[in-house]
Each structure stands twice: as structure tokens, then as C-alpha cells.
Image (cartoon, rainbow over all chains, first blue to last red; front, side):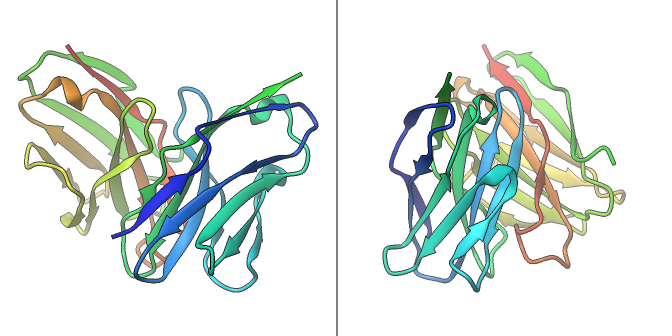
Length: 113
Length: 115
């Protein structure tokens, strides 16, 4: 079985400041890793994914994440946030031979002017 | 491209009733997954349908059932509703020949409130 732990439930940040959202996972098999964003009253939108290869993954809207296999982490970063980045962010894992996505509990990012 | 479409967007049901939620996948997609997202939590996998059959199921009771139609659209049925079934129900579609979950698109969800 897989599990995902998002270490911060809420992250307040000022506009144009950097932000990092932390995600650790556990799995006995190889997994793919994902970050999703959910804006209020909307579904999930894929920000980025790690399948294999380079451990630094770049996504949409200026986000990037780094896969660390030894620490089983997949932290999300953005060097300069905007008000529009205010949303809920979910880390998710999926075994490479499975159809199920397992999500963390989410991190609420609130960007203030 | 309309993306993944779910209906209705909101509904209110009474304990013990039955409910049916509907999902139309993104054009070109043939696989549909359903997730339950309780307030303040991450989505939980209910099941996935492909070729009109349930091929993987999460840890949900038999009160949760589904169906996939020949046009790839899908329904989620929940019987004997409990207050704890109140949640946002998300549908995700994908294409079978893509790597699992790597090209999944989510709908905006159906907000179910059980009173």
C-alpha cells in the first residue's frame, strides 16, 4: 500500500515570495509522483508529474518539484508566487502498475499582498 | 473540447435515499475513475471502469456501485445514503494506452450533501 504525507496543512505567504510545499511518501513498489492544484469550487488540475529520469521536474505556472528517492520526498516549489496561486495543493502517488491515485490531505496556500 | 463533464454540480439527499452521479469523459478518453473528497481531505479512490467493467476498486462498501456505457460515460450510484457520504465526488478520465494516471483529467465534481 502507498501513503502520502503533506507536512504542512496551511502555508501563508506574501506575494512575490518563494514557497515550498513538502510531500513525503511511502511505498514498497515503484511509483509515479504528481502534484495537483484545486481552486475553490473546482476539480483538480495537474501541475506536474515525475515518471522517471531527471529528478527536477518543471510544471505549469512556474512550479517545479524535486524527487528525492533516498528521502522518499517530492517537494513542490515556486520562486515567486502570485495572488492567483491561492489554492489547495495535493501531492499524489500511483504505483507504476496500478490505476489508483493516492492523495495526501492537501496544503492550503494563501497568498497575501 | 469540453473536458470532463459531471452532473449535477450540487444535490441534496436524505439519509437512506439513493443517488446517481454522472460523468462524461474527455473526448478520446475511454477510462473513468471515481474519487470521493470529504471536506478538508484529499480525494479517495472509489473505483475505475474500463470496457464497461469495474477493474479496480478502493476501500468502499458495496453501497457504492458504478456503470460504464458504450460511449465511455459513467455513473456512480450510492445506495442507503449516510451522513458520512457527504462529499465532493470527482470523476477522472484517461486513455487506456497512456501510462496509468499520467494523463488523467478531472471534472469539477458533484457536491453531495446528505441530510
